[in-house]
Image (cartoon, rainbow, N blue to C red):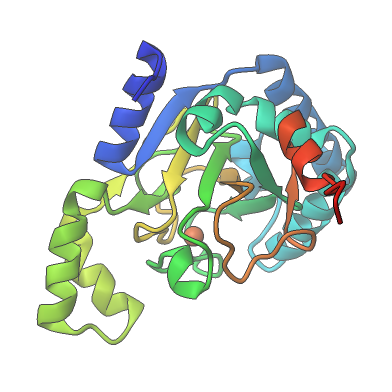
Length: 257
Ligand SMILES: [Fe+2]
């Protein structure tokens, strides 16, 4: 492969682990996103509160309405998606390609401490119909670790997982979780970092047992000419870095027809 040294380093880490944690590439873009979400949060809470301490102002019965309000507002902002992309643009190019599709709406997750209503049991998005060509860019707004973060089954344990599935034939996601529990990696990600992970690998979260609230966003990307799953072009994915030759070729008219 004809990679630059830095690209090779990122690629090797991703192939080995199934994920890559990098430093925010464009701090201004991240700051714009943080300010936007703070403004929207303030509209509801009417008080200054840090993301980490949200649970001191909101209870779990109201959290989903608040999350949906911010989700809708942030996705209405014209620069939000391009800012999101710029936070990890180089890493995405290295890992998925430089001609990309991006999800039309970016997801927001807020997990208050001890709130059992916003859980994501162990799963792979591909089991639920996503294309294995999709990659997930996960960006936190607070420092995340232990149960205030997400877990993933690292790539190096995937063969163990396949063997265990055949042997134990688990029926529920709880059964799957028990089988691989000891092999899971709880990712530690600072708020000035991002995570890119292979969503073919089992991942999820549990009840946040830490003292503070978790805030994170996630968005899928894929290279334009890769197979699609349930999530289609237009309604779910739109091109963001289509290259000139692709545009020319798609519009090419055969002069002899
Ligand atoms: Fe997922």
